[in-house]
Length: 620
Image 1 (cartoon, rainbow, N blue to C red):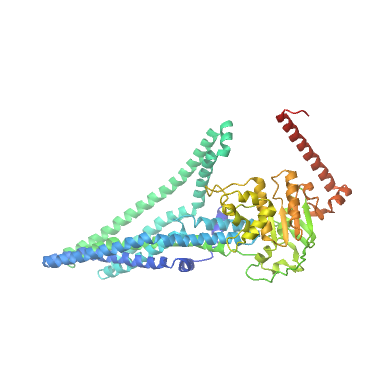
Image 2: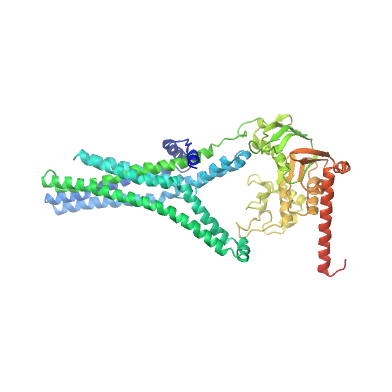
């Protein structure tokens, strides 16, 4: 386990300086004010400390020299006004810098979403990609995460460095021994405390595991869908016991951390006592020997006391910056995750009036050493052909569609579009050749019009009206107060409408028709409908796509009887091919499955008819 953890933490691609430059470039591209405000705040903070440390010695010197009250008041007023002005400006900047810092993090969140939505589709099944994406999302999840907190770290590091230089100059004029004692004790104290912080940082995954367990159990207890099971099966005590068990583990983890912090704080206290004792003894001796004046004593006393703060602060912020840099490095690694498909460049798509897609000796493996989903598969899609791909669940139907549409590249073999390998094309341009409706479709929380067009730009309202009429959804949309501008998804908009299952299918049909691509693909979007409704919808798609090459996928054989050609897939291979009638005549697996399904659907219909008659009080 230890080796595995070390292996996961091993490859850090970017160093601190590189990651700081990355964040600066991001801010200059989005919110240029962020680094400028950091510099201004650091300068104001250093100025505040410089004035503060000289305030008391200056006043005391005037008093010792019997200065006039007027002069004394002018000096006090000058120092007080300067401090008030600096602190007022600092407070103003601190109030207004948050917007920019949040803005930079928001830009990174947008970049993560953009990468996830535009990455090569095969990356979505890549565990390494998923892990890097989750890590990237974690480090942009809140105000305390590295992508926003790094600005505070940089600002504090800069102001500590400025104060360190100022106090170093002050103390160097007295004695270098004070500086050496302060540096030595501060470094020892830092490394003791940092060892505990490093332990907590390395154990963050374990802490997250405990938190996730507790959160998961809490969510189960609150889940309305599980409320009946929890009550009927008496799961309350079991869930409570499970929660208490993981709460104990979480508490023990934190107790171990608190013990380490206690001993680290104790060591720091002893070192501080030793350091301050030596320095104060030295300064008092100098005063008694009249080697320094009382105002100088106050100056050096204050400088020595806070010099440690700057040394510890610098060391601490460098350590924090290192940890934040690790997170930013992981974020950048996600942005630079390898893309297998060609996007920015590529040859133009050779579209013709009649387009042909050919799969030559195609094999597809989802994992090395696994069983091929498709094996030495050959298929040619003829121009304007209506092709049905049928077979039982898990036969490889959807995988075949993903190869045809370029969502996947084959492990072996090639996919040709009008004789050219699709790997040569800009993949985004190739995607435009297809109108597809999948089993897992998306209804966006926006207007009906945008759900059809899938864009807010260049919307053709006449075309929307046309496809709404063709799909049979026009009357429904016209009955709504805002018509095609009516918003969907009540979970997001309180004034939204919810479409029925049948209306949703019509909306998907309108979307496919609006895209008007040369290839139409239906990958079982009607799986939730009954067989008759599915057949009717598939027939409607067929009637409205006469001039397109269409692919209809289903595990219900009756739904695709109208197709020009049917291929029956089993274990990643075509085992039967032909028209519906020809396949029935062969009397093989297709015919057998069709007979079984027909019998099942007939029994279901008879049962529904029987139930309806009973409800109506009729006789069979």
